[in-house]
Length: 513
Ligand SMILES: NC(=O)C1=CN([C@@H]2O[C@H](COP(=O)(O)OP(=O)(O)OC[C@H]3O[C@@H](n4cnc5c(N)ncnc54)[C@H](OP(=O)(O)O)[C@@H]3O)[C@@H](O)[C@H]2O)[C@@H](O)CC1
Ligand SMILES: Nc1ncnc2c1ncn2[C@@H]1O[C@H](COP(=O)(O)OP(=O)(O)O)[C@@H](O)[C@H]1O
Ligand SMILES: [K+]
Image (cartoon, rainbow, N blue to C red; front, side, top):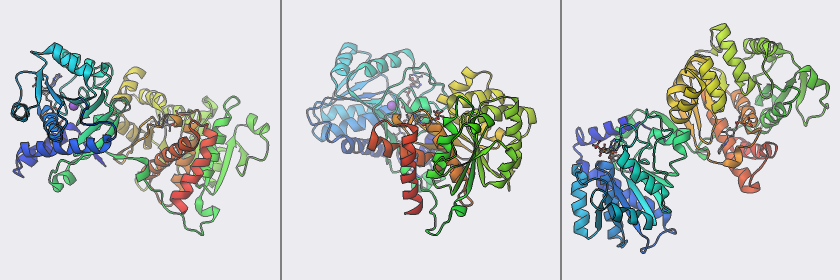
C-alpha cells in the first residue's frame, strides 16, 4: 500500500476541495464516520454501550475528525461519551462540530476552563480517541499540548490515535525525546502516513487501520508515494516449476566464519538451502576448515578461495567473518569475481572500508545493482559515518531510527546496493529509486543468528530467475517474517536454528505449491 508524507496528503485534500469541488466537511464526515465504524469492527468485543469513551479534539481538522467520531458513537447509543476540547478558540471545523455535538446532547469539556474535570475524565475513561493534532503539526508539541498528551499516556484507557498519534506529525521531525501519544490503535485516513513507519515511530502507533475517506480515486492513484508498505503475507516469491532441478535453483557461495564466530555462516548456509537454493557451498577460513567435520547436511565446504566466487550464481559474504586487512583483500577479490551478492555483518564494515579505499561503487549489470546489503541499525550507523553521510554515530542512529527515508536512499546510491535496514520494521532502499517497508513486530524473530538466516534467504532470492535485487530483498524480508510468525505460533520463542525449518515450509509453500 502506498505511504505518503503529510504534505502530499494535504495536497490531495486541497485538490479534492479545489479541482473536484468536494466540500471539506463532506470528507471530514466520511473520515469520522468510517473511522468510528472501523474502530467498532475492530473492538466489538472490547467495548459496550456502558464504556466511557473520551474524544479529545485539538483546534484543527484532526480535532474535527474526532468530533465526528464522537457524534457517531453517541448516536449509536454510547451515551456516556464525552468530548474534551484542547482550546477555547478553535478552527472552523471544530467550532461547527462542537456545536453539533452539543446539539446531540454530548458533554463537552474544555482544557482551558475545566482542567480538573478534564483530568478526571481522562483518568476515568475506558477509551481515549486522540484528535489533538494530525498531519498539521509543526515541530514538537508545545508545553500545554505535551502536558495533555502526558496525562493521556498515563491513563489506563485504550488509546486510539486519529490519523496519527499526536506529536508524531512532521515527516522531518526527530521524534526522539519528544512527547507523543502512545497509541494502541491508529486509525489513519485514506493513506498511511510516513512517520508511522520509522523504527521509533512504529513503537508508538500500535495496530494500523487504514480508514477509507472517499477521495477521488484518480487523486489517490496520482499521489506521490514516499514508500510502499507491505505486510509479509502480501509478498509472493516467484513459483518454481515442478521439474526444477538443483542447477535451476542456483549455486550459492557463503563466505564467513572466524575461530570464535563459526556458527553464523552455517546458519546462513542452512537457511539458503532451506529457502530453495539448489547448491550451497560454504567457504571457511583455514583454521575453521581444519576442524570442521565433513558432513554438514548437504552443504559443501571449501577453504577460502575468493576466485571461486566466479564459479557460482551468487555469494553471501560476511556472517561471523571478522575484519582485518587480509579479509579486506579477500572481500575485494570476491566483489570483482561475483555476479551478484549479499553483504552482511562484518562484510558491511569491510564494504565501508572498501568503498573508501576504492572510491568506487559495487559493480552493477545493465544499469541496475546486483547487490543487497543487510545492516541492523548499529551496522547501518557505522556505514553512514564511514561513507561521510553523517557526522557521527549518534546522528546516524537518530536519523535511522526516526527518519531512515532520509539516509537510506543516499546510502544505497553511494554503495550501488539495495540497503535492507533490519529491525522490528524493515526498510528497503534501492539505488534505482524505490522504498519499501515491511511489517515485523515479532519479538521472537529477534533472536541471535536471525540476521544470518535472512542473509541466506536474500542470497537464494538473488539467484531466482531474473529478479532484480530490490525484489529479491523484499521477498527475502517478507519470507523471513512469515517464517518467524509461523515459528512463533508453533514454538513460542525459538532459536535461529529452529527457525530454519520454518523457512523451508514457508518457502516451499509460496514457491512450489
Ligand atoms: N488531509 C486530508 O486529506 C484530510 C485530513 N483530515 C484530517 O485533518 C488533519 C489535518 O488537519 P489540519 O491541517 O487542520 O491540522 P491538524 O493536524 O489538525 O493540526 C493543526 C493543529 O495543531 C496545532 N499545532 C501545530 N503545531 C503544534 C505544536 N507544535 N504544538 C501544539 N499544537 C500544534 C495547530 O495549532 P496552532 O499552531 O494553529 O495554534 C492546529 O490547531 C489530518 O491529520 C486528518 O486528521 C480529514 O478530516 C479528512 C481528510
Ligand atoms: N521485534 C522484531 N520483529 C520482527 N523482526 C525482528 C524483530 N527483532 C529483530 N527482527 C529481525 O531479526 C533479524 C535480526 O538480525 P541481526 O540483528 O543481524 O541478528 P544477528 O546478528 O543475531 O543475526 C533482522 O532480520 C530483524 O529484522
Ligand atoms: K491525532
